[in-house]
Length: 98
Image (cartoon, rainbow, N blue to C red):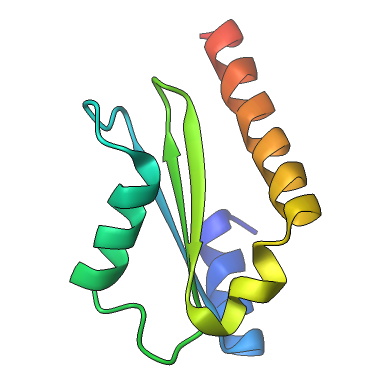
């Protein structure tokens, strides 16, 4: 099962949406501000269960922005540290291989 299929299945079962945005660079922009602006511009902050994971490959940076409904669940320090470490390790691995 590929990532798109997994995300669709998760959305159907959990009534949550996960958006994964991969960028080459932010060209100097702050990743947190970028994600917050994205949330406002796409109107994702409405009462919904949305997560936007932004991965910037060249910096490398990752940031998870959540709707208020999911914020206390996904933004606790232990959870944040584990998913960031896993993604950043993957980015460094890809850089080493390529």
